[in-house]
Image (cartoon, rainbow, N blue to C red; front, side, top):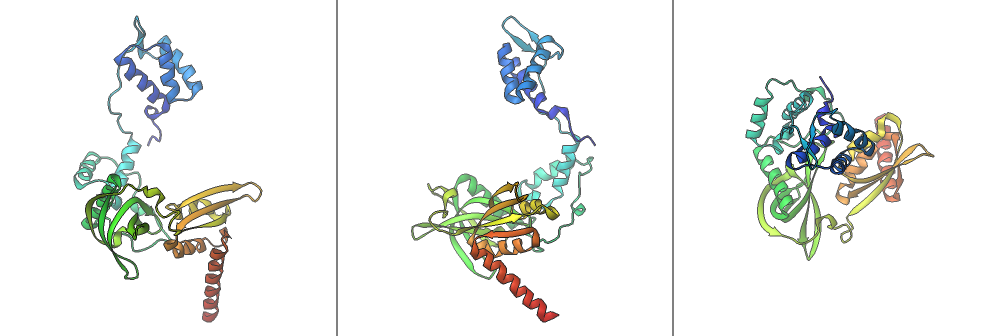
Length: 324
């Protein structure tokens, strides 16, 4: 199977733009060079223009006022076999039903019926992963997901009833502003805020625990990206040092993919320093994930987080000593 097709390279795209423009009106040499430079590297544009100008690439002909296109590229570029195989694999992922409706999925299945998938779901074995994944094929879950996504785009509110993991129930009007996916937990979460006593309080809702959601046509002029960061103090940061052993950096980036973070490389220690920003409600989960990396990760700050790590390790050691 071909892994790369030239029709999708920067250079072909740049020439395509030249031909589309030159089909509408004559282009000067300076205009052609500008279009090529915008879509490719500058040194490439210098070598491409003479080939178009001389006819080595017989795509332009010279008119009285400039260069005109000999032919025009098709409006839609055909998919490569690699892309078709990749799409076929995506159709076997249950999460695809969250982004496409049933008719769209069925049409794609029919059009790709003769295409083998690039990979299959059973080709992957996930370890250290939650076993209670969200039910992505549930009609109610799909409705809830689409509703949250719609309100995020429209910046409107939802009337939500929610049941937490410990049986705590919350209901009220929420303004969702971001959806995130956790590969470790195999769950989607919605970042929302609600107004309580004149303040905007942030909530992170697992979509699988939303028991009822209805759209409300209420807008809010506030900036969701700034909710609670300065007024609520509900966010904390932990600084960790990551070694290069056991592919720790890549694993860490995957496990903490949905957290806001900043990572730097220290040439002196030959290690990475990562600052992870998390909601206080997620602190227990962050501690568990950090501990799962063992000696490949070291917590540098803050002291409160370090003490929590030490306390958990101490308790674990005491439990092991009781068993043996």
